Image 1 (tube, one colour):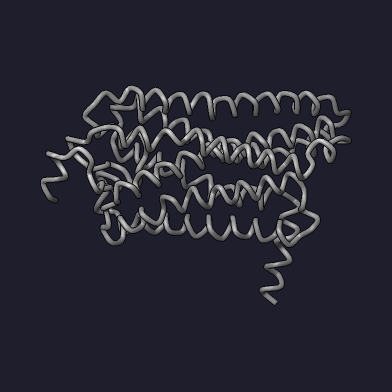
Image 2 (cartoon, helix red, strand yellow):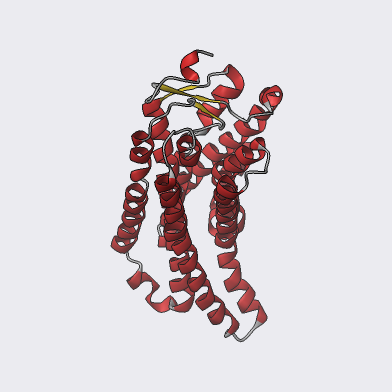
Length: 315
């Protein structure tokens, strides 16, 4: 590795992604599950988009939000996984400074977008269960489009300072990033100056972005649970709660590793580096893989449209 990787530069033209430090000997084997995960992400989310697009009975707010989630998952995983596999298979570790900034921006902006879509889906469930007679008049096509646009704009704007914060710091120590992709805190930790602004803004996004989303999701489900417990029979309660189960599973799969990854980056200095990196990858790759599986298995309407497709293929 050249000397420029360690000393004597302020704005490196490239960064070096180490991948998963400490597990280099297992890269060939690690690439197999990651590649399978990516295939599932692509197939699962494209199938969701295909079914909703060509099945008129699924042209409803819930499934439009699901399509937004599928698109977000595709972008989120594609922004990191191909480069990760190139590190594992071809030892292609270099990434241009501009490409690093772009990757960093896409990861953070689409992560916030996904959080906003989960909040929108919680609102859809709240209206459908607590005010079912007005569901179609409250969540019209125009309103759904505005909600999706608001989630996209919020994610785009709130992540916009990240690349500017990364660009403003001098990098005089090293350009080696101990990760599989460019993540904001991993990049700014290489800077020579005081990075407290970057760290504080990252916490602001975590609490005022995703934290507020979780708050509103929780408020929606408190109202949903109150409505469910007012139902007269156990079967009715279970049936209504079943319509929310897939959304709850997807929420847990997204937020738990996300918050765990964010907190371990800042406060888990005693943890092994490969553990930090693996948790960061779980957060970015597992939810996009699980979401189409969860909704495909748990949502009756999608399952009914999906099964004939495969049975026709077999005959």
